[in-house]
Length: 376
Image (cartoon, rainbow, N blue to C red; front, side):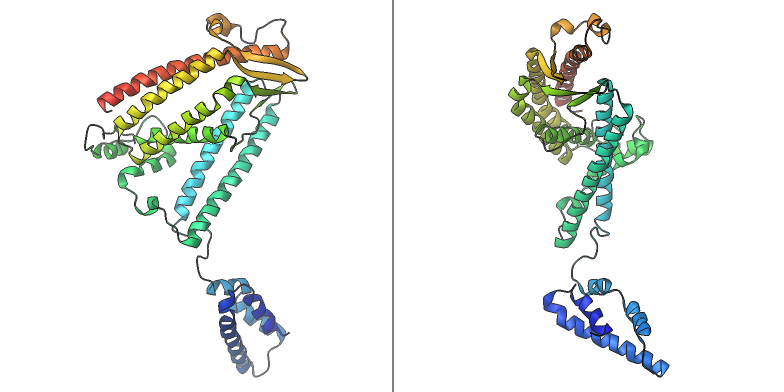
């Protein structure tokens, strides 16, 4: 087999079967004509090295075959790349916040190996980040291949573009620029229920943060998402396993429905970012349900079990721990074993967390009642 045939076979292997013969015949004529033109210039037959030069000028078989292939020639085309880039950046920011929060939780829990915790968090973030980028690229590639363009790419509205301002770190501070304030104030509501909640701030930003948090929680709650290090605490070199009390099994479905209801309200809020009264009216029963869940968990009294080296103790509490003396006693329980001390501290912390959460839900309930009535 001569050089031309080897080259053409390499190209043909990358071509569709139905069009292979015609394209190969066209390429053969092109190559032979280039060889003959070069031979006429030199006045002699070409050697193998000179033929190689001409074939390299025509192009690598993979590149030449791609010229005849139908469909996109990139995984993420020019049109989709800006959306892909924004989605990847936003996803990596969320993942970074989640893993930093996990690292803080382990350190507060009394981790004895700071370096190992950082390494585990970085490893988890790196793996999750690669998975995110791969999933985003696969989705974009499928959209390119099949020519799919969702409606939100072609039928977007100017009033909904405020969410993209979240990518500007200069706007993360509490002060909002005068230009942003004028832009938000320029959007007028058509009714009392469709007014911006605050000048200079896009009303949908509240729904964006809530959607991310509740969406990640729902995925974690059903086991579709895992965070390295959750469920374990390092205590002086020992790995303390954390297991949930029966109350979490009892309320598993209720908590999942509660999180999904939050997600649904957030999606509606993103679709109608200026429907302030609508979001407030939906949030009122959700806050009431949150209060019921919080009270039920608090009343259970037994929340977690800690186990290490065959020893098990409970994280449990109640109204008796809702006092300043209990907070002062944190980390100062003389005569207690390490595991008992850890469980006692976590019991106090969990009791106060539930109490503060209940107080926050009450405030949020009252605030949304006011927003539903006032429309702002």
